[in-house]
Length: 399
Ligand SMILES: *Cc1c(COP(=O)(O)O)cnc(C)c1O
Image (cartoon, rainbow, N blue to C red; front, top):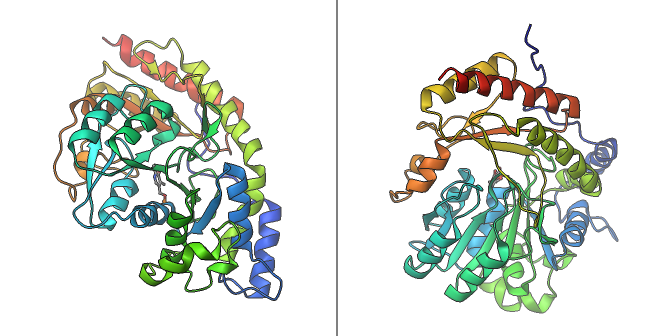
């Protein structure tokens, strides 16, 4: 009998007891709205923002309703509006072009490389010719590009960078935390990301005017003085009159759940990376399978795993997916023409002008993806790698 894996690729760990206790306190107090604080009380959201700013090293942090909201809020704070062009990754998930569309702007997609990072040569060309003044850079699936070169390209072209760190909360490039290169950075605390509050997001920046705009946009009314990781009141003087309220606040319940998770994140990152490196090791030297080599400059958070089957046609990829699924290993394929579950492609985002990305087409045609939730053990990771290795080998040898 071939061994079968019986874990769930969508099952996360429980909320830590400290988070449950803090959440019950918030519920008992009844003060769920972030600005509903008792005398002398900071409130869970303001404390979370302060802790997140310290964690990333950003001067300012703002907690919001979702990662998607954080991205659209950053674009609005940068003044992106209807008809503007915004550069972004051709390979990412739907909320990224969705954030661009939400402010009436048009995504201009950049090719992906075989390292699964944004193609910097293509970016350099488009930065000069597209007319875009902003890049919404998605660190898709946690793969970080050469951030020094990216910033040189964008600075030279006068393009401001918003980093989508939904998959890189806790990651770094040459020791600089992900999110610390661009003008603003957006994070998600949705269930499948690195901290789990069901829904939620965070936005960071060092720029007092951008952050003052973001805070007013998020729905602070004139209560911005209750923030802690925020610019001083002077920064709001102009901003408060001219910035619309586009409500998207986080509430104290979610922040209470998140604060203990943030304190635990470094330990969780080590656990994710143990799973990741186990799968990586187990898949090396599999015929027809290309492991994505991670550069030494990158400190990763291995919460998902990708590999390429560059020579396989659609039928063979289908055979691998079916055979792995029959043994309990749920793989996603980014090459599928129809969007399925969380995988969709730039050509399925038909709200954007049609664009042609031949390199991205070629790479996505062989790109396989799986989640590595922390409910898996290192032994599970070993078994998963073994199953994939066996089934890919079988299909490869079938000629
Ligand atoms: C999940 C995700 C987001 C947005 O997060 P939400 O909190 O679900 O809005 C943004 N970018 C990427 C790449 C994501 O996977």
